[in-house]
Image (cartoon, rainbow, N blue to C red):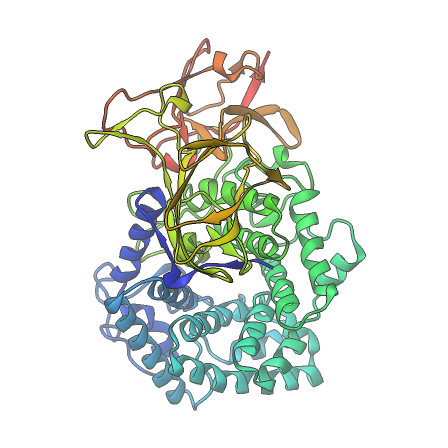
Length: 604
């Protein structure tokens, strides 16, 4: 089984991913701790600073939208904030962010004490009582899961003992509530959107070995979705997508912590029905209005509420579990497409704000959230998503090293043969410190021309495994220390096995080209995809694509920048040719406020 190299052992180097991480970190730092805590204060009977009299909501130090004191999901965002902040603190020296995390955790301990010593919710305990008689209440377990998750991550990644102390006391409340429900109304345990609970209780049991967490694991392990997955067939259509995906995380964590083939089979069955047998939009999305689209019928569900961002984030997490367990590149290929067309495409490149959905209709516009007045669920998953990149790149089994994603980065990895420092960068030729064009791309700099550097503390023989992307257009070219090498490709990986020295370089080029992909269920509709990157037409309507789709070079003319300072990430832009009218295509992740169209009618 592979292990991700994360924390301080991996660093993202300059490029688009580093920029997006920085925008996200700035947003985390911008938010006021008192506002993040406002609903926990209110529940504990503490008046939030400036919250006694609100004369002007626009100027009040309060968070609104789903964080407003009147919203039943209030307080969910703080847990996401803690998880994201903990990931950043674990990955580097962040003294100011660390101080904020510690302050917030201490304040949560204060709220817990004011609540009687166990409850530490941003919502009242009575919300759980309301689930028993079947009265409508909006997802109290979902809301509490975020708080538990955030505190767990602060303990796991930062070693904060106050955080685990809060959780241990909160777990006592849960044990008592679960026992009561097992006697009175067992169905209540699976109400309130509880899907994430199984994973987090398994996490806490793995961290503490405390038997009360094992009790909670057992209490939450039986779910109707698992029963449907066990029976086979389509277990998801028309089901709430983001309420079901976390159950796959729970199955994965159960396989790791508790063990048992049944949990592995459930995770595999979930992926089969969610992806393999369902199909997806080119962007990886497969939901409309938060519900799973029936298999291979995505063309009937094009709208303004496709691809909820929470589903993208959670599907990447499910794929990452499967990748670590199996090492199969199909899961890394999925992650790659999702991070370009979800993580990047649904984050505003200037402000860092998320878009809840990614509209698929022709002439769509992305609707961005505000900084303090919305706080949809996707705000929470977005701030976590932008901290994940360091954990998706490098993997090891202790003997060899695997590059799962091609993101500029460096990592220190301990192998059986000794400590190794590896890095990857986009490889460009230098002349007088100016960037020149790479001959691989026909006069264009290519993001898929990569240089890997390996520095071994001691000489040792091991394998560097490089994923061959599913989108590759031709054969990869490889050189080691400047000498051409033959690619040893097995099971979708280039395997470079050698005795590594003090410093070795490996240059790899993956040729790519634009291709047109059909829309599931409406095959006359196509979109342009370069490598893993979906291209969006900057046009307010479906004006059609005319020509032989198997010859994209006759339809699209690349836009080139003939300057020495050409920035490697400013690429993948095209102008159509021989169309009526012609229009420009750019990476979907570059679209901000423009009207765009992804799918076009093909006209032959």
